[in-house]
Length: 171
Image 1 (cartoon, one colour):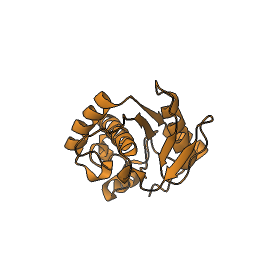
Image 2 (cartoon, rainbow, N blue to C red):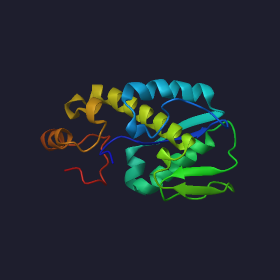
Image 3 (cartoon, one colour):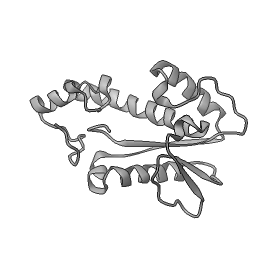
């Protein structure tokens, strides 16, 4: 995962039989198309929300627990209480008394998970672009905090920022 910045999660409740052309796993969609699809998701969804957990909390809790905390916050911020929760991945902690199911590669199997992945990815990408204006030497506007060679070389040259995840292997 990324070496810096927050972990971002999104929750989306879609109406039955929704048809949003191109809606699939966010990693399979170009950035321009993701933005267009996100607008359609937000206008069509019954409810949606996004949340983030900062790098300091990631370092304290570990990335898995911070990710689950972000998911819980995204669920908490929905204006509609979900009847059932489907989660992308294989780990989740019970949220309230709502049944849940973990689905590996869920973003390529369920539209609501794909929609949530698009919203979360777009949110985080935009955030990292803004943070890149402050810390431009790390190229976050292109690598979004992921461990590219350029990013790792910049860490070697300039050191880390207050946004880096210190519990991660940075170099």
